[in-house]
Image 1: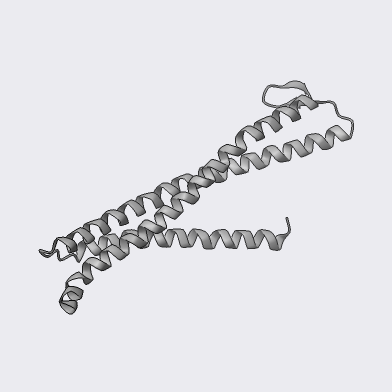
Image 2 (image 1 turned 45 degrees about the vertical axis):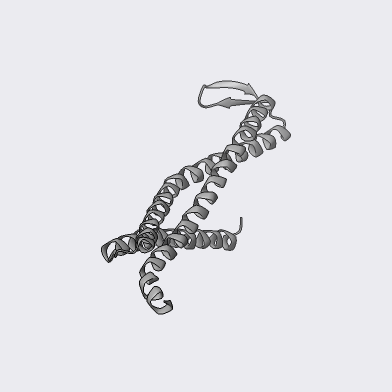
Length: 170
């Protein structure tokens, strides 16, 4: 990878992390602020909107925290997978240069290179779907977090605007 490509990827990742931390912090800040400033009246609709908003903001924040917990695991597993793919390339290059066996450092045994390459490729094929599933889970968690945040915020806003709107319209 070129240096410009790598720096752009790193910059994009940094921006994404800042955005995710900001939204998670904003979620908990709005939850705390809405609870601290709540003036629940006697109107059932207002109370329902307020409590519903609090619940959605809380669940949204918890989902964000769960997502933060899973991201390092996903990145670590992708790094391990990339390392295995690099090993396959190196072994194939050695094979093309006439090498037929490799010494495994873990067991200190000599193994046929063809079998070693096949075992690593099989491992990659088994593990790639698991990583895709983790990535899909992270994407879905982000969607749930964002939509629950928006709906929770709107619900709290409706609760706060309920009495003035009712007075204005009726």
